[in-house]
Every structure is written in structure tokens, then in C-alpha cells.
Length: 146
Image (tube, rainbow, N blue to C red):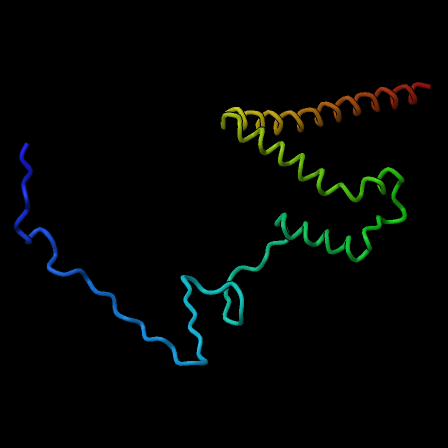
């Protein structure tokens, strides 16, 4: 097979576009390059930190623990005091395990499980309330007849 050599330069631009040189700053001056505005400083117009963010809540909790020298409140039970130091790491491990399990399942199964849970909890609460009302009505009618 023969190879063809392109001899015409009309397919390519005659010269590549040139970038303009940026002059270097004089000594003692600084140049800041940023794609967006910096997230700090007096000119920042960003969003305030949301109080529901897990990182913020965790930092607030850590600060409170440091302020109290990692001592739990005195009115807590003994088992709560023993568990207080490792509680944060245990919660993170459980949520990490839950996230791993949900990430490894099909989305339709995870959504179906969430829908089943969302429907079964109110249904169970309504049934318990109904049975409590029936029991209280039976007790009150029994007291009324006596």
C-alpha cells in the first residue's frame, strides 16, 4: 500500500495562535490566580455553613468533648459513660457499613426497601394506636358497668 504525503498546507493553519506573555510582577508584589473567588478573605460572597452538615456537627461535638476533657455528664448511667469515648467511631462505622451495603445493591432494591420502611412504620404506629384505643375503650366500658 502506498502512503500519500500531504503536500498542501491549506489543511493546517499557517501559524498557531500565540499566547500573550503575562508580565512578571515587580519585587514585593504578589499575583493571585484563581478560577473562582477565594473561599476566604473579606471579598468572599459564598454560602454560610449549614448547621446540618455532618462535618460541622462532628467538629462541634469534638470541641465540646475537648472542653469537658472527654468526660461524660455526671447524670449519665455507668454504661453510657464507658461507651461515650467510642460512640462517634461506632456511629461512623455503622453508617459506613450501611452505605457500603446500599452501594452494592441495585438501586430499585434500595428504593423499594426505603419505601417499604417508610410505609410500614406509620402503618405499625396506626395499628398500635388503634389497639390501645380499643383496649382503653374496653377498660372504660368495664369500669362504667361496675
